[in-house]
Length: 76
Ligand SMILES: [Zn+2]
Image (cartoon, rainbow, N blue to C red; front, top):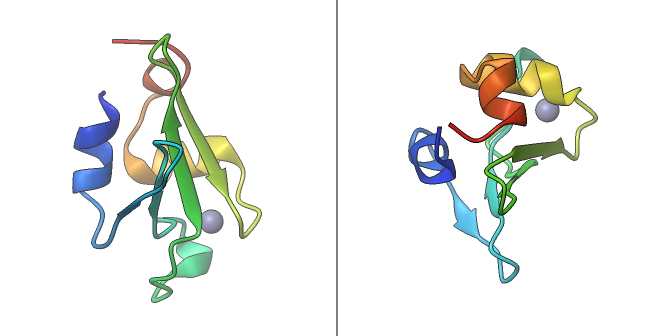
């Protein structure tokens, strides 16, 4: 999956100066919380890096986004 596809699914999104995106974290513990907690970056090798400021594990965020482990860890 490309990062654009992923962030366009989000209800809100902001592009940061460093090229990363911020979107609301899809994990259930943030249900109803539209703050842009999740940083989404795509490295040159295609790896999608997910960082939630609320402390969610990347694998949980990936699952909530519908990303497989392969998509999270490797280029398509
Ligand atoms: Zn989270």
